[in-house]
Length: 238
Length: 74
Image 1 (cartoon, rainbow over the protein chains, first blue to last red):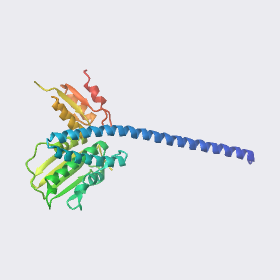
Image 2 (spheres, rainbow over the protein chains, first blue to last red):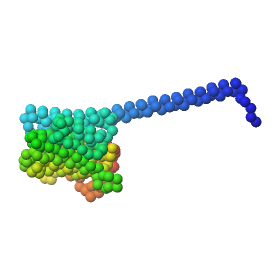
Image 3 (cartoon, rainbow over the protein chains, first blue to last red):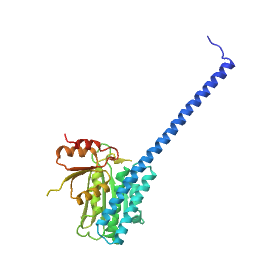
Image 4 (tube, rainbow over the protein chains, first blue to last red):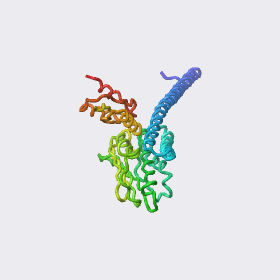
């Protein structure tokens, strides 16, 4: 049986519709608030974890820098420079709420003091990201390579140059991430010095964290560092 | 006298290097260091002559507890 609704029925239906809409809206708002609260709690836990990790890493850097047995002034310089590299990495990670960080961004930040007009130090590679933990190690590793290049390597004299390049597997390829730091045009590297913090990190620490292999080599034409690692939770395509 | 052997599981590269250093200074040999659960478990199937282990609980995307379980005497 069809009939037109009465005005009273229409008003009642409108009231129900409004109430329902308000209820839906309230649920949406509450969910939204809940998500905001959960996100905040997650970030606080993540911050706690990162602060502890950072303090442990600072302790590690202090210990390794002290072990080099330099005089206090040199210790201070090396220690401060390493902390600065770490803080630049942290700045980048904090900007992204500790989500994986882009290698290109990381390299440009840490290597900025050595970039100059870009003719002596080139950086190139496809988009790739590192997890927060891995990014900290990569940041310090790049800092160690650059510092060494400025003090003793290709960036210590005019005409020297460094190329930092990396590649990621194409679709269907089984090879992993590959990175190369290659110096040329500098003085021939002196015979390998005893293992310092930089070479320990580059040869052992960093490759282990990434489940790959790393090798710092001293060729007559300059220092060369190669890192190969499988794509994983720590290295991902951007 | 032989030095006691330790296993180290730690995902933060700098911290892992320091822990190795500290353990060695304390008279231990670090038999192996890993940053993930799976390779540590695999290594443990072939190496059971450990005297101790230092395990970082939070390994980024996973927790270390399966390694601790595997270290329990049968």
